[in-house]
Length: 220
Image 1 (cartoon, one colour):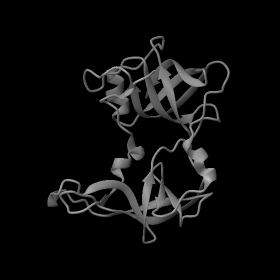
Image 2: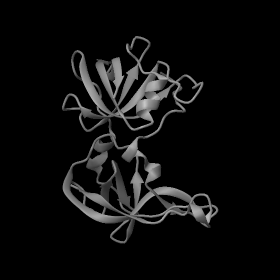
Image 3: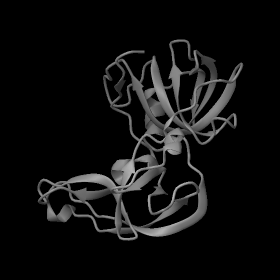
C-alpha cells in the first residue's frame, strides 16, 4: 500500500500522546516550541518515540517534573510544572532512561544500550490460521485522502497496542491491514466513538506475507 497518508481523524490515544507530555524549549516566549521532556533527579530527559514493545520495569517509581509549556507566547497560555512519577526500567539504569506514559525518556547526553533496539522493532505476523487480537487503537493511515474528519475507507492500516491475543504479540504495537475484503470494516462512526475517545479495537486476523491482515474489525 504505497503513499499512505494519515487520516484527519488520527489521534494518539491517552497516555501515548507525546504532545501532551511537553516541556518548553527554545528562545523567547513567542518563539518557544514544546518538546516531550521531563526532569528527573535534576536532569532533563527527552521522549524517544517509536516504541514497539513494552520494556520490562521493576515496579519501582520515582518522582519527576513535567515542565509547563507555552508554545503560543501568551501569558495566559503558560502551563504550570506538574509533578509526575516515572517507572524504573529493569534493564537500563534510571541515570540513563526512565519509562513514562508508554514512552522511553532518555537523559540528555546519554544513549540507550544497543540491546534495547528490540524495543523499537515491531513483531512480524507468524501465527498459523486465523486468530484474535485486541488492543488500544492508536491511529490509522491510508492512501485515500479523507473527505471529512473521521473518513475511513479501505485499504487502511490500524496502529494497535495489543493487550490480548497470542502471547508473542501482547505488549507490542502492530499494524493491522484492512482491505476491501475486511467484513465488517470500520466506519466514521467508529472513529468518533472509539479512536477519538481512546477506545479499543478487536480484530480477527491472519498472516499474509508476515503482515497482520484483518478479516473482521470491531470497536469497543
